[in-house]
Image (cartoon, rainbow, N blue to C red; front, side, top):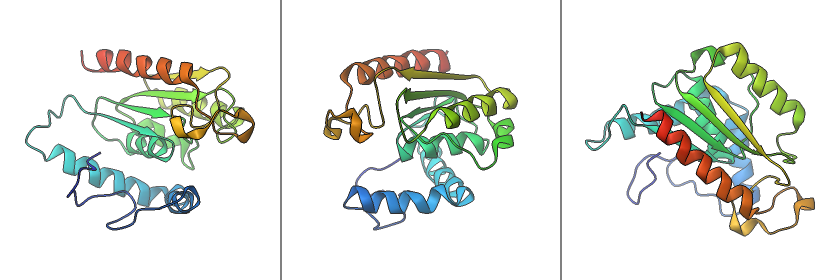
Amino acid sequence: MPNAPGASWYIYGKGIRPQSPQAAGAEAGKYKNDRARLRLRVRAGLAVLMGHELTDPKRVVAIGYCFGGTAVLELARSGADIAGVVSFHAGLSSPAPADARNIKAKVLALHGADDPNAPPKEVAAFEDEMRQGGVDWQFIAYGGAVHSFTDWNAGSDNSKGAAYNEQADRRSWEAMKQFFAEAFK
Protein backbone atom coordinates (compact mmCIF):
# COMPACT_ATOMS: atom_id res chain seq x y z
CA MET A 1 0.00 0.00 0.00
CA PRO A 2 1.30 3.44 -0.76
CA ASN A 3 2.60 5.08 2.37
CA ALA A 4 5.26 7.35 0.93
CA PRO A 5 5.85 10.88 2.18
CA GLY A 6 3.23 13.11 0.62
CA ALA A 7 0.83 10.22 -0.04
CA SER A 8 -2.75 11.25 0.58
CA TRP A 9 -4.01 7.79 1.50
CA TYR A 10 -3.57 6.18 4.91
CA ILE A 11 -5.53 3.36 6.51
CA TYR A 12 -6.63 5.32 9.60
CA GLY A 13 -7.30 8.56 7.74
CA LYS A 14 -5.32 11.66 6.93
CA GLY A 15 -3.35 12.93 9.90
CA ILE A 16 -4.15 9.98 12.19
CA ARG A 17 -0.84 8.52 13.32
CA PRO A 18 -1.12 6.58 16.59
CA GLN A 19 1.85 7.30 18.85
CA SER A 20 1.65 4.28 21.14
CA PRO A 21 0.74 0.60 20.87
CA GLN A 22 -2.41 1.32 22.87
CA ALA A 23 -3.48 4.10 20.50
CA ALA A 24 -2.69 1.92 17.47
CA GLY A 25 -4.74 -0.89 18.97
CA ALA A 26 -7.68 1.43 19.49
CA GLU A 27 -7.52 2.63 15.87
CA ALA A 28 -7.14 -0.91 14.54
CA GLY A 29 -10.08 -2.01 16.67
CA LYS A 30 -12.34 0.45 14.88
CA TYR A 31 -11.64 -1.35 11.62
CA LYS A 32 -11.56 -4.89 12.99
CA ASN A 33 -15.07 -4.24 14.29
CA ASP A 34 -16.23 -2.74 10.99
CA ARG A 35 -14.87 -4.96 8.23
CA ALA A 36 -16.85 -3.14 5.52
CA ARG A 37 -15.06 0.07 6.47
CA LEU A 38 -11.70 -1.73 6.54
CA ARG A 39 -12.34 -3.17 3.08
CA LEU A 40 -13.24 0.27 1.73
CA ARG A 41 -9.97 1.67 3.05
CA VAL A 42 -7.76 -1.10 1.70
CA ARG A 43 -9.57 -1.03 -1.65
CA ALA A 44 -8.97 2.74 -1.79
CA GLY A 45 -5.27 2.15 -1.21
CA LEU A 46 -5.20 -0.51 -3.89
CA ALA A 47 -6.89 1.89 -6.32
CA VAL A 48 -4.15 4.47 -5.69
CA LEU A 49 -1.49 1.84 -6.34
CA MET A 50 -3.19 0.48 -9.45
CA GLY A 51 -3.50 4.01 -10.83
CA HIS A 52 0.24 4.59 -10.65
CA GLU A 53 1.97 4.55 -14.03
CA LEU A 54 4.70 2.15 -12.84
CA THR A 55 2.29 -0.46 -11.49
CA ASP A 56 2.01 -3.70 -13.43
CA PRO A 57 -1.51 -4.82 -12.44
CA LYS A 58 -0.59 -8.47 -13.11
CA ARG A 59 2.24 -8.33 -10.57
CA VAL A 60 0.61 -6.92 -7.43
CA VAL A 61 0.80 -8.70 -4.10
CA ALA A 62 -0.30 -7.08 -0.85
CA ILE A 63 1.63 -7.87 2.33
CA GLY A 64 0.90 -6.82 5.87
CA TYR A 65 2.12 -7.27 9.41
CA CYS A 66 -0.21 -7.57 12.42
CA PHE A 67 -3.21 -5.30 11.68
CA GLY A 68 -1.81 -4.81 8.17
CA GLY A 69 -1.94 -8.59 7.76
CA THR A 70 -5.58 -8.55 8.80
CA ALA A 71 -6.15 -5.75 6.28
CA VAL A 72 -4.62 -7.67 3.36
CA LEU A 73 -6.72 -10.72 4.23
CA GLU A 74 -9.80 -8.49 4.10
CA LEU A 75 -8.57 -7.11 0.78
CA ALA A 76 -8.50 -10.66 -0.55
CA ARG A 77 -11.93 -11.43 0.95
CA SER A 78 -13.28 -8.37 -0.86
CA GLY A 79 -12.47 -10.02 -4.20
CA ALA A 80 -9.52 -7.79 -5.15
CA ASP A 81 -8.02 -8.84 -8.45
CA ILE A 82 -4.39 -9.18 -7.38
CA ALA A 83 -1.86 -12.01 -7.56
CA GLY A 84 -1.65 -12.68 -3.84
CA VAL A 85 -1.69 -11.58 -0.23
CA VAL A 86 0.80 -12.34 2.52
CA SER A 87 -0.04 -11.85 6.18
CA PHE A 88 2.53 -11.92 8.97
CA HIS A 89 1.24 -12.58 12.52
CA ALA A 90 -2.21 -11.28 11.58
CA GLY A 91 -5.62 -11.66 13.06
CA LEU A 92 -7.19 -14.41 10.99
CA SER A 93 -10.83 -14.19 12.02
CA SER A 94 -13.65 -13.21 9.72
CA PRO A 95 -17.18 -12.20 10.66
CA ALA A 96 -18.23 -13.43 7.18
CA PRO A 97 -16.28 -16.63 6.38
CA ALA A 98 -18.40 -17.22 3.28
CA ASP A 99 -16.64 -14.19 1.76
CA ALA A 100 -13.68 -16.50 1.11
CA ARG A 101 -15.56 -17.44 -2.07
CA ASN A 102 -14.69 -13.94 -3.33
CA ILE A 103 -10.95 -14.53 -3.04
CA LYS A 104 -9.13 -14.47 -6.39
CA ALA A 105 -5.63 -14.07 -4.98
CA LYS A 106 -3.28 -16.72 -3.65
CA VAL A 107 -3.06 -16.46 0.14
CA LEU A 108 -0.03 -17.03 2.39
CA ALA A 109 -0.54 -16.68 6.14
CA LEU A 110 2.64 -16.72 8.27
CA HIS A 111 1.88 -17.32 11.92
CA GLY A 112 3.52 -17.79 15.29
CA ALA A 113 2.37 -21.23 16.45
CA ASP A 114 2.04 -19.88 20.01
CA ASP A 115 0.45 -16.51 19.12
CA PRO A 116 -2.15 -15.75 21.81
CA ASN A 117 -3.80 -13.17 19.52
CA ALA A 118 -4.77 -15.86 16.99
CA PRO A 119 -5.22 -19.03 19.06
CA PRO A 120 -5.77 -22.54 17.66
CA LYS A 121 -9.56 -22.12 17.42
CA GLU A 122 -9.12 -19.02 15.22
CA VAL A 123 -6.49 -20.80 13.12
CA ALA A 124 -8.82 -23.77 12.60
CA ALA A 125 -11.67 -21.45 11.58
CA PHE A 126 -9.36 -19.68 9.11
CA GLU A 127 -8.24 -22.96 7.58
CA ASP A 128 -11.85 -24.10 7.27
CA GLU A 129 -12.80 -20.76 5.71
CA MET A 130 -10.04 -21.11 3.10
CA ARG A 131 -11.03 -24.71 2.32
CA GLN A 132 -14.74 -23.90 2.05
CA GLY A 133 -13.94 -20.93 -0.19
CA GLY A 134 -11.83 -23.02 -2.57
CA VAL A 135 -8.89 -20.66 -2.06
CA ASP A 136 -5.32 -21.36 -3.20
CA TRP A 137 -3.84 -20.90 0.26
CA GLN A 138 -0.88 -21.77 2.45
CA PHE A 139 -0.57 -21.49 6.21
CA ILE A 140 2.80 -21.76 7.93
CA ALA A 141 3.05 -21.85 11.71
CA TYR A 142 6.45 -21.27 13.29
CA GLY A 143 7.08 -23.30 16.43
CA GLY A 144 8.25 -21.32 19.45
CA ALA A 145 7.02 -18.06 17.90
CA VAL A 146 4.38 -15.74 19.35
CA HIS A 147 2.82 -12.55 18.04
CA SER A 148 5.14 -9.93 16.47
CA PHE A 149 7.79 -12.54 15.65
CA THR A 150 9.19 -10.23 12.90
CA ASP A 151 9.40 -7.11 15.08
CA TRP A 152 12.93 -6.52 16.39
CA ASN A 153 11.52 -4.13 18.98
CA ALA A 154 9.11 -6.69 20.47
CA GLY A 155 11.65 -8.01 22.97
CA SER A 156 12.48 -11.65 23.52
CA ASP A 157 10.08 -12.75 26.26
CA ASN A 158 7.47 -15.08 24.74
CA SER A 159 5.51 -15.01 28.00
CA LYS A 160 4.42 -11.46 27.14
CA GLY A 161 2.61 -12.81 24.05
CA ALA A 162 4.66 -10.74 21.61
CA ALA A 163 8.36 -11.29 20.98
CA TYR A 164 10.91 -11.23 18.19
CA ASN A 165 12.00 -14.62 16.87
CA GLU A 166 14.97 -14.41 14.52
CA GLN A 167 14.48 -17.88 13.04
CA ALA A 168 10.76 -17.37 12.35
CA ASP A 169 11.49 -13.90 10.94
CA ARG A 170 14.08 -15.29 8.53
CA ARG A 171 12.01 -18.31 7.55
CA SER A 172 8.86 -16.27 6.97
CA TRP A 173 10.74 -13.84 4.73
CA GLU A 174 12.07 -16.75 2.67
CA ALA A 175 8.57 -18.25 2.46
CA MET A 176 7.27 -14.92 1.17
CA LYS A 177 9.98 -14.75 -1.49
CA GLN A 178 9.10 -18.27 -2.64
CA PHE A 179 5.41 -17.30 -2.69
CA PHE A 180 6.24 -14.28 -4.88
CA ALA A 181 8.14 -16.46 -7.33
CA GLU A 182 5.10 -18.70 -7.68
CA ALA A 183 2.54 -15.89 -7.78
CA PHE A 184 4.43 -14.03 -10.48
CA LYS A 185 5.04 -16.98 -12.84
